[in-house]
Amino acid sequence: MKATESEFLSFTFTGKKVRWAQKCLGRFKYRILKRRWGVSMQHRLHKLAQYIRGWMGYFRLSEYYRPIPLLDQWIRRRIRCCFLKQWRKPKTRFKNLVRLGVDKVNAAKIAASSKGYYRLSITYAVQQALNNSYLAKIGLVSLKDLWIRFHHHR
Image (cartoon, one colour):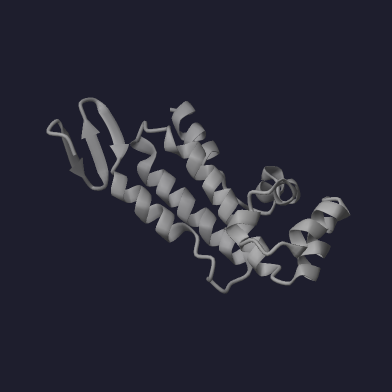
């Protein structure tokens, strides 16, 4: 923290700028998605939406936009990772990827891959199957959309 900055209630004040404290971002990422949380995807997305809306409601005063798109991408990647972990077996992965519109060759490559869930979650086939519009349709709240809505409707 610089000499001209002050921190209060998880906000950092620098001159006329208000942004959230850097520690808050770490806590947000730690709390947001636990891959080993044994609940249904519907419940996970419901709790995630509650947390994101609450977090964004609290930090809506902040004018700090730069990390928002990257954080939004990271959340979607973690959700894709959770889907892959849920589909554990190669046969299930193949069946679900094909059902979501991936061609059989690419679905077979992903299903047979020995790479980890997080690494597979950024592949083209997984992103094609679990695209942003599909994730929004099943209930994933976009941090970027909330930020834009809060800051352009003042």
